[in-house]
Length: 227
Length: 317
Image (cartoon, rainbow over all chains, first blue to last red):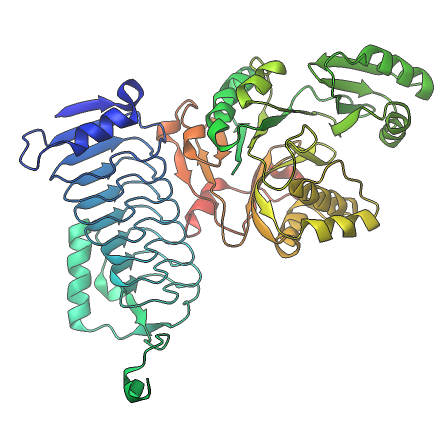
């Protein structure tokens, strides 16, 4: 295991070290100490590393992640795992706004609460939140899953495309074109798999499913001849 | 941009370190606001028959002793002043209104930046670290402080345009964001007799609260009414004689984070400003919800004893 102390080596040294590791490198286990809430830690990784950040991080932690598994022992600031492509990002505490924004793939696990705009414009990422999410979560969500074990704030799934939302608790309000949908056995299986991958224990029977009513699109297939 | 910070000490053993603990919080927010900085510190409360004024002058050569002596003679009251760089802290037995009127007539260059029984407000243009050191706050003792680092957007970089802005006795406000309807609201408040010292949008928010409080509205209600009457982006931190309160606009446009341990409660625009506090790595950290009044030491909030953990557990943090 390799240990880097943020206060000793700084951001550039940490990120360039982690970014330059070859996919087949034997140096796969990394610990980052004393992150002190600084921004953009462990961004742009592209190798199957295990990076353990011991402390609270600032904005844009683990952004653009590919392949790596990044764990944060604490709180994550704005834009956690923004535009993640693959891999796993896990935060043990709460996360600020826009966690998982625009993510294309991979799994983001927030064990505590996520703030507003969690999963905004998600494009294939799977997000599992152990607590609650704030307002405007999954705004314009295109592909992927958002699982919320607690409650969802106002305007959940506003202007949503094809992202699938599962919420166990209350939903303060649904956004434009977001509706409750039937939960089939197939959906329960998908949800059970997501919870298992996230290592969060919650009965799938307690969840309700939400998604797009498909009425906001400019293009309506039934009127194709008229365009 | 701007950065705001607040620190409230729950553990009395830390009171002697307030200024030292607060300094790195303010300095860490320099990249968000290098134009000017200001703080409000609550300490050394004066007896109930006296008032403490925070006064400021453009020059640090201003003769505060003569001002105090003239004031004392004119109003037949006690008047002690201690100078800190461009600011003078005046403690007087004179009537608050009479003192303000006398100052306006006899020392028009002197600005009243705050008043009350314990608050002292210091603010200047320049880098936050320099401003903090100019006012000798590193060794300051007390229970709580709020501060601001400014990157000006809506008005000029001047001392008068710097934060905190006083909103009444022992009350002041720091603001991160920008208000859209400040011109119209300023004109409305002027018609109601509220005076202004700058073209700054945040001063309008402070004046709005001042006016509401003068009508007998509680601080908590005034803050909730502000959600309807202020148009724009804001995270406010409001210092009171007992603690501080935090309020964000309904869409939570501007960053904010809260942290709490058994020893302290802190708020900041970004967590990195809190990271240097003792035990911060083990603190409970969360983002405050929009349109929600958070408060510590909340006696002035109409008896609302807000509990941070209750807020955090109520739903989305």
